[in-house]
Image 1 (cartoon, rainbow, N blue to C red):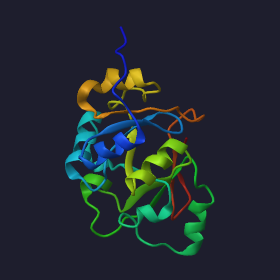
Image 2: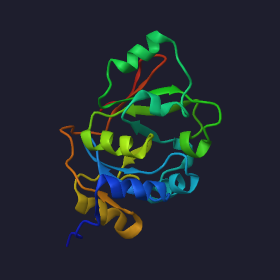
Image 3: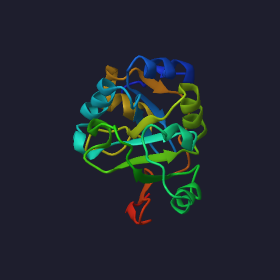
Length: 190
């Protein structure tokens, strides 16, 4: 029997959870995501633990605007920036040069940071209300399919989450495409 989803959160309540260092789930362009405050080490490590994801893999950040990534990425030349901006807002994650001081528990052992300016209205509203970027990784334990319903999120994580933001998934079928900013190479297809 499938567990009943819950608790369902408004954007305002989800922001309270983020500020308390807790993990939330929320609908994205294609699947449910797990998110937290990327500056909170305890919360980031909790996401990694819930997913059984190694810390050296790194995580994706989403935001409603490029400037929210300021603490996490280095400035790049205009031609490279234009490459990313041509796909944003949208379902393409870009690997930008990682800013000095970004910890390995967030970026993994990579010289880059994965970032995406999301087009999903609820994700944009969540980032705007939070006032910054948030961690965005698919809501599933390692090797399990990404959750596409609140009930699947609950089945995977039960009461380990602060809650699930109420809203609809976007029209995408798969998690975001990932591209390397320097080369333009596709790392993961969407």
